Amino acid sequence: MPVVNGPLVRADGERFRYPCRMTEPVRRLDFGRVSVFFGEKSGKYPDGNQVVVRGSDTRAAFDTPLVANRIGAELDDAELVILGHAHEDHMAGLHRLPKAAVQVHERDLDAVRSWEGLLRHYGLSASAAAPMLAKIRREFFYAPRPDATGYRDGALWELGGSRVRAIHMPGHTSGHCVLLVEPEGVAFLGDIDLSGFGPYYGDATSSLPAFRRTLARVADLPATVWVTSHHRGVYTERAGFLEALAAFTAKIDERSDRLLDMLADGPKTLDELVAIRLIYPSDYEEVWIDDAERRTIEQHLEELVTAGRVAADGQGRFARA
Ligand SMILES: [Zn+2]
Image 1 (cartoon, rainbow, N blue to C red):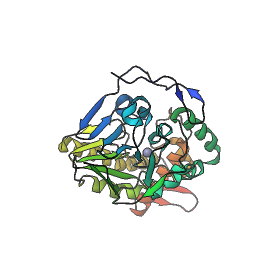
Image 2: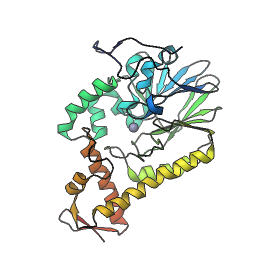
Image 3: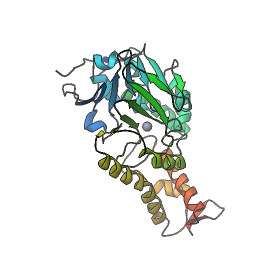
Image 4: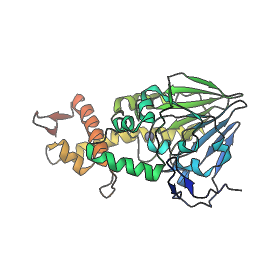
C-alpha cells in the first residue's frame, strides 16, 4: 500500500498541501539494506530520489528530496540524515526529521545551518534573494538546520551491518560528496546526476575545474550500483553507467563549443553573453538563472582564455582568438 499523507504541517505551523499527486505509490528498489525511493519522473528536478539505509543499529537517509514527504515511517524513523551536499531540493524533507542528526561536508555546513549561509552558497544577487527564500519555503518546505554538524572526506558511519563512506567530490558545490554504502556497493552520486542537462556548476561555491577533476574520478568508485539524485535514478550495469558518465562529461566541452559559436559574429561582453544564455532555454524563467548563467559563462571563458581560444580585450569584451 502506498503511504498517503494528508495536508502537511510545516515547521512554522503553516499548513499546505504537497504539490504532487498524493495517491501515486512511491516506486522503490532494494539492494540489501539500501532502499531507493524514486521521486516524480525518476527524481527529475524539483523532486529527487531518496536513499535510506536500514542499518541494524541506525537508520540513515541520504538527503531528503521532496519525495521524502510521501514515504512515511521508513523515512520518518531515520535517526541520521547524511547530506551529500546543500541545495534546496536535497533538504525538502528535513522538516519531517527534527530529532534526527543532520550531517553535511564541512564546506557546505554554513549553507545548511542558516539562510544567510545558503544565500552565500548560491551567490545570488541582492534582488534575487527574497524571491528565492519565498520560493524555497513555498516549494521545498525550507527550514535551516542550525543543529547540523560537519564531516570530512573519508568520514565513516557504522550503521550496523552496513557502513557509509563519504568521498569528497566537489564541483557542483564545494562540499559535494558521493556516499558509498558497503558491503552493498551502492554509490549515491547526488548531483553528479548524469542528466541530459549536464553538470551544474553555476553557484558561488561551484567550480568547473573541480567538477572536471571529480568526473575523472567517478568511474573508479568501487561500486556495483550507482544512484543519482535526479532523473536517471539507478544504474546496475557498469557499461550503461560509463556511457552515461561519458555523455554527461561531454556536455562541458559542448558548452565551450556553443560559447565559441556565440562569439562567432563578433566580440561580446559578459552581460551580452548572459542575455543570450549558454545553459538554459530562453523561455525558462527562474529567479537564479541570470546568476547561474553568469557564473557558468565566466568559468568557460576562463578555460577558453587559458587555452588560447578566446582573448579578452581588456575593456570587458571577449573575442574568438
Ligand atoms: Zn544540487
